[in-house]
Image 1 (cartoon, rainbow, N blue to C red):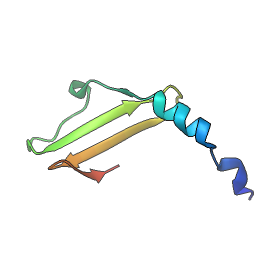
Image 2: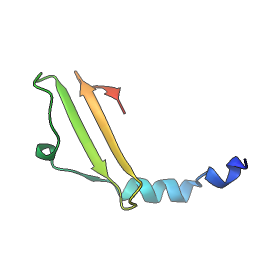
Image 3: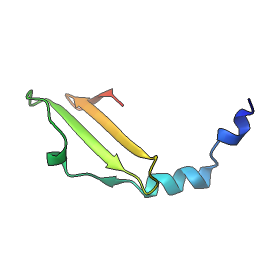
Length: 62
């Protein structure tokens, strides 16, 4: 398999990053513990969403 086809150049990475928009936290089922928070960003491309779970301000799930 040729992996070079899967490498993104810096401009594509910057474009994807700039397309990210925060999704309203109310749309995510939050964990009942107040120090754990879920965050969702949706990108301009249908395949580019990012979800994070923070525990005491540290990423514990990506």
